[in-house]
Length: 142
Image 1: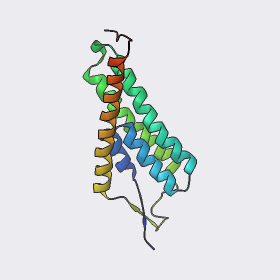
Image 2: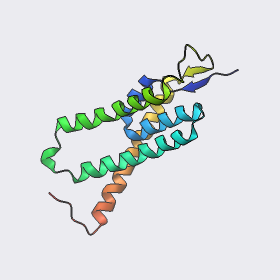
Image 3: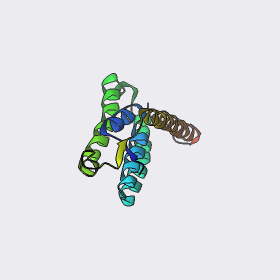
């Protein structure tokens, strides 16, 4: 029997740190699907996308003097923390590999490709949001 691949907490951490909430939501969604929890899988996928849009909207409207290195590091550190807390709360016990011999960790190259694609999606989402704001009749404060 072929082993199924799951995403470890370190895959989630690295993917969320480099790719943001889109990657975190996708990886968590795949783990939930593997566990047969389609409802939480859908929540994770949609939650990652909506969280990315909300975060981008907040950062775009944030005054320039607030955008410091500290805020950037706090925002970047929030995604891995959130992904790991969801992993520990809902997935860790069911993915316990010492007990389940039918599961193997996903290869690093697969996580890297998903992270790069998620980063591209995040950049495209932010570009679409910026263009929509520029074309709208609303004015941006600051």
